[in-house]
Image 1 (cartoon, rainbow, N blue to C red):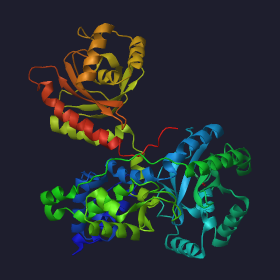
Image 2: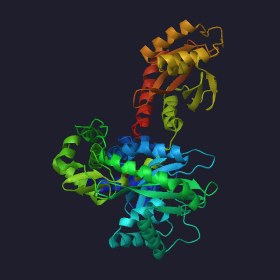
Image 3: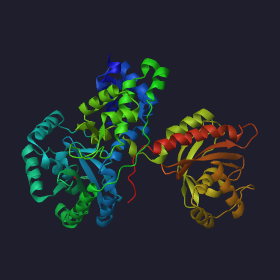
Image 4: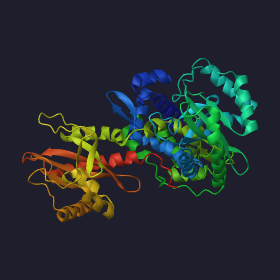
Length: 549
Ligand code: PHB
């Protein structure tokens, strides 16, 4: 029966891909069934399973991709020879050129962006990490096609015939004014082969131009394309080539050298125990164990050096079947079935008995989810907390000597605390401000306090610097702050920190209560608040950040 076979993994990935290609990563189960051609009950079981894994949530009767899903794309990026090791060099080039710079790896007959360094202007040009563009519509893809065989061109032709509107590439607009034919593309590819660089003169959209050079490995094989991107209001294509080509070539040369000498990736702790057993016994037939296990295998492959390099079988690294079974705690036969399914679906490549992830893994929602702001990530968690406690919940970040609200959920009470996103308050008199100040390094904390106007806001506001310093020390030790009527009479609030993957405090979340004896004592609210902060922290750390230069 399909439950133990490859079916659920394949269908689960189809559901994720379908959701990932919607503008907001959400769809009703019925529509998903129609779009994927699946019956409703398998879609429901897939949704139950993915919800349990933290990859989906149900909101207003729609299935919504959840930030935790980024850990799949992050697994690919972590093992990538390009994303981590070359990102600092791309960043440096972007500084030199003062233009956006990107790195794209081949993915079938497309290229997929794995590094993006954006120069923000009013008119900023950027794909997101994980976005794919058809080879014929980018400078990067033109370079990737230099190495194509006739079989590759056959596949390219079939894709173009099946999808004349490029609907399979949600990141690119529909081609306007007709698209070039095969002869035109082949001529561009031949020219790129002869010159060693390629241009994109508004192939993606009007105004957008790019010049790209190849980055090759020690054997001279194409690994990725390095592009500088600009806009016709700043340069024409010959002008961009004139300023960017030499710096691009120098950077590509350094990148080739860096590919040879890259350090082992940061490994995340592998799950050595099969966690899907507990879920299975709890959820019964609604839980698709083979989907959960297949995704566990996919995540585990991210811990192998070279796990995601390039789009072809020309890079070292990868994981053996035994290693994948060991890393996931699964029986060999189960791990093998998952690997073969993933290979067949284009998420994994196998060579010499080793399996590694391919860039297509990024198609599972990564571009969409990695673009969420901290406030957007936090919003569903704050809403859930506010609904559970019947008190408003908020998130804020430090902004100079103050705090700035970035997300908020109100409790729907009559007497409510009316604060909106964007509101700024002095840090010293608020629970979130104290949590944020307490999380700073000592010099930084002292500097902010010295710059602050420690004015009293009520009769209770602590304004004495040494008293405040003692309070902040206690907040740092206890991991929460409780402030009663120091910001406003009648208001008390409790806050805890949200951390990044390095343990730094990046934001604070709070619950606001009336300062009245009829309200619950703050201690009873603390566990739920901490739980919310933990969930938000988990979401923010699911994405991939390249190591600093
Ligand atoms: C390209 O290579 O043509 C290219 C690269 C990055 C962009 C746009 C186009 O953001």
